[in-house]
Amino acid sequence: MVFLEGPIERSEIPDLCARFAALLGERPGRSVICDVAGLTESDAVAVEALARLQLTAGRLGRRLWLRHAPCGLRRLIALVGLADVVPSLPAGMRMEPADGGSGIEGASGVESRRQPEQREPPVGVEEVVQPDDPAP
Image (cartoon, rainbow, N blue to C red; front, side, top):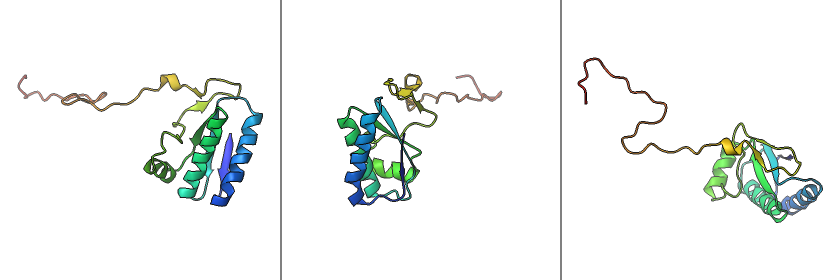
């Protein structure tokens, strides 16, 4: 796991990526968690740094996942169109140990949510029938 803290200055990004690459080169595994709870500013520079860290990880055959990303940072990432490039780890998901495993633990049990079709009641909603209602 990698931790990012404080505000990030644009001039620090190349050094940050170099240190990140060196760290990844020493550890096995395909996925890397980047805990961003310590970032004090959710701005364009933070998004750029995260995108470049993801690019660095990709060059090394890895995938970067954000953990504890504040809502503002997730929104900004989505606003600039990078939500698929710099994904957040879903709540309740854990990464497997860094033993060269397959990545996100429990990912096969995640179901995508869908919108109910027209006139189809949402799942889990029961309709209450009034005794004086005529039968359809």
